[in-house]
Image (cartoon, rainbow, N blue to C red):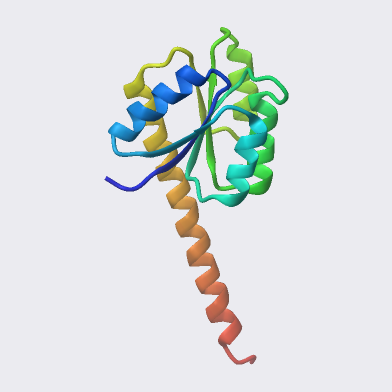
Length: 145
């Protein structure tokens, strides 16, 4: 399995600790934080493939955090978790660039599948950028006609 670096963001410490342990046992590299501020520090300083973000958090909700993550690291895929029967917030997140959303409590197998799917999309985007940069580099090295 590929190394997938995850950032888990949820203010419910017991939930996010347990989720990180379960995902690490499944071969992921999961790091967790309990605030949007800590999440942004990690995003700015780390190489994450996927972030799993709770929608309802104090200080900054998951939708606002999604916007900040996409601004700083546009290729990080974000999966939103919503626990307040608010499908509308999940839909709003998708409109703003979230990969997908799941209702809490979520089935771990469903979450693992979404994480892998999100990672595949990120990998495809990384490859497109690499090909475009290589093509641009080659074009820049050609003599002008």
